[in-house]
Amino acid sequence: MRFTRFVLLAMLAGAALSAQAQAQAPDPARREQLRTELHKRFGAADANVDGRLTRDEAKGKMPWVYRNFDAIDSAHTGAVTMDQIEAYAASQRGQRSAGH
Image 1 (tube, rainbow, N blue to C red):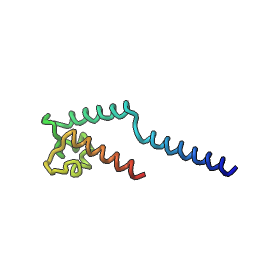
Image 2 (tube, rainbow, N blue to C red):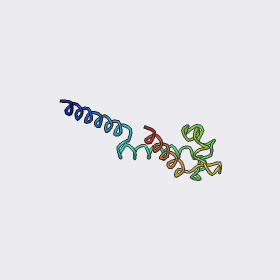
Image 3 (cartoon, one colour):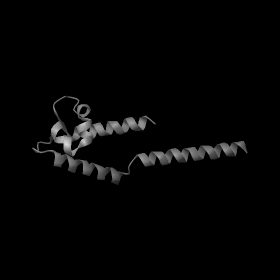
Image 4 (cartoon, rainbow, N blue to C red):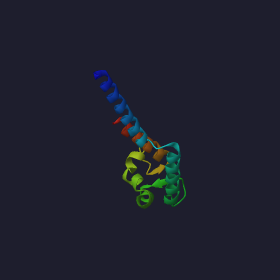
């Protein structure tokens, strides 16, 4: 009886962890949709169409980039690229995943 209860509890815990992991990781289609939206917002914010955002360009159109600008612009060039934004976002996802 104890072994059966233990196995049942272990199965429930595993199912709960699996459901939590799935809820936190968007499916590939959703992730691509988010990436497409990010690229659209970047294009709209890039006023001089140079492929880089300054802090001022990010301020009104990309508030998350604006708030995290210094961390994204780790080379302190005064502008960030889409690649830098995506790399920073991926590192933040990785930290959140590891922090459970």
